[in-house]
Image (cartoon, rainbow, N blue to C red; front, side, top):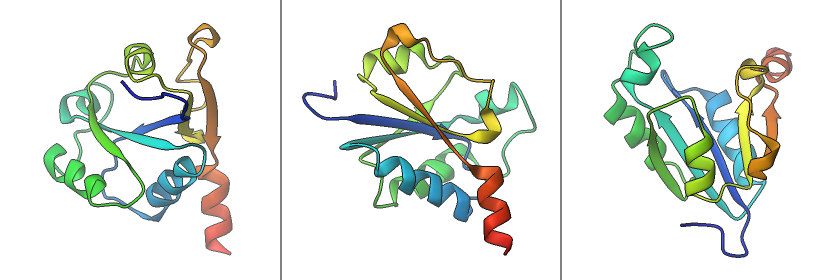
Length: 127
């Protein structure tokens, strides 16, 4: 669908209570390629592994769509990113370092992974 001679970057998250580190990660992801696709986790997905989001899915989706950095904003309905990587020809996957060890994308999918330093970034922001 995407990716004809362009680097396609994908990042995703709940983006509940949207804050500056969310924006920084999206901006960082934008700088890694030509097309940025942002996945927003549905309420059902989030509720499957932690408390339901405070902000409803449709509102979180609208917030992301209003940003200038994403080219496309899509619902994310599963934590298994294999289908998204294949279907959208994702070249680069960006995830916050709070997901270290939780998301494993197979190298055979040909997708690079970049960790955005959320934890270190918080330390820098406090100084």
